[in-house]
Image (cartoon, rainbow, N blue to C red; front, side, top):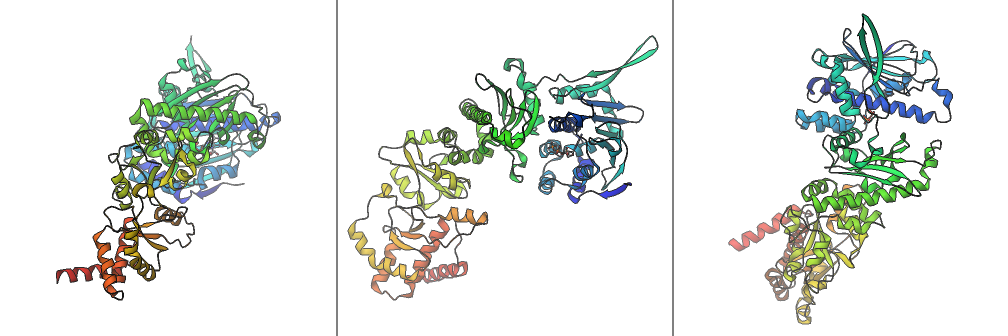
Length: 623
Ligand SMILES: Nc1ncnc2c1ncn2[C@@H]1O[C@H](COP(=O)(O)OP(=O)(O)OP(=O)(O)O)[C@@H](O)[C@H]1O
């Protein structure tokens, strides 16, 4: 097939524009990204050729070669990995933009320039980072199957790229960077070796460079391996320096900050494996727009089997990155069969236990760090309450909550809450809503406050689902403060009061068709009215969430509860007693309902009518 010129996908064009025009600091990470691609390509061909040795064409001297050429001002990164066909080169390097590219571009534009290389790494636009240092990039590649399959892809990153057939002797990929004028430092072998050791020391395949020695007028060139190739996870814990863990973490997670906690452990006995897992210090940047793939890298004696194996880590710990290397995993099974291997279940149990204890240790010894982790990832961790039956209590112990009694921005734990419960408090109470500031002013808290009971204030969407499923902590059930009867807080209403208000309640119920019932309440001490969901019903927050996630919400009327001790409520009772047909009875009843709607954080259904009723009141009181 002849040469063709193609356009980059629109988002990629924008991305490339950004990379070529605004990224200068930390640009050395391009080398890490390209070496990592080369290493992945080798791992892929190794994996694909298990039992199909002939596919390798005898080319199995695995290595990644870095070649600077001072005259041509090029830097070449070569591998004998899986290579790409013409179509693959077109797709992978030019026309398929990853799912979150648009969102990424938006985020990157909002960030300060200095932060962007970190973002690029996290997002994994690996290959394109080449344009931080190169004017033009040529990729000469071929898959297994013969030299005639070779393809040359080239682009200056300005909007178009070309592809043409170009025979290539060996399988694999050469990425040739035509270095920018101000990036000539990357031709210096010492600089390159330093970078390789810094970023890629533990890459499992040798990273080699040519070294030329001149002796007695004759030059001899030898290939030297620059990286140590010592898989960090296979070394003993006291041998590995913190910076080595950190670099390894950055490489596999694309994070630019050090991890909050490193967990390095070996399990011996019937099943043997080594694991190295990292808890991030903050919420991974791409978590909000990409379906986050969880799991750890799975190796069988240093051979990469799967990049993120979801079977060795529960999904509520998907923020953990790392490696598991198991001695007894068969290499030559399909991925589907591998997933049924009971060893994975054992690994998962162990890793989960270690991560949960790691988090507990972080919480107990480095609280500030834990809070920073928790603020971003607490909502993910909370899924474990509902999803991990075995460990749910351990997860519960890791949770932090603002409560009515904490200062804003400070937290309590369930253990702490239970310990401080006054005698006679039967349950743990919580209230869900959008912000803690709003919840702190909620009328639902009044009777709890009066009784001296604390209430947890929950604002993560996951709370609505996870907390009720979790059920009880240390035998104390968790009860929503705005659902069902909470007699515990206020006691019963005297019969005399009930009788006094019976007629009014009936009348209001007749006039307000949008509520399920009208009752007197002991829930309020100051406010006049509030809306309450039935014990199993949906509260306002849940309804809002369901709508937000595009779920159909059935009509779900709530109960209007009136406070018989509130002067506005008693005044309305008297007005109704004097003349049940007075039109103000309905108007004021509606105002009470509107207040209750606003207090639960919802919108009044008829804002114009609401304003009219308020204005009438103002006019009447000022007359
Ligand atoms: N040396 C290489 N050999 C074979 N294929 C490659 C090579 N470099 C890149 N590719 C292909 O191009 C694709 C895009 O590479 P890029 O570095 O942009 O992202 P990635 O490697 O998929 O993601 P990440 O950087 O997050 O690991 C790769 O997925 C791979 O299919």
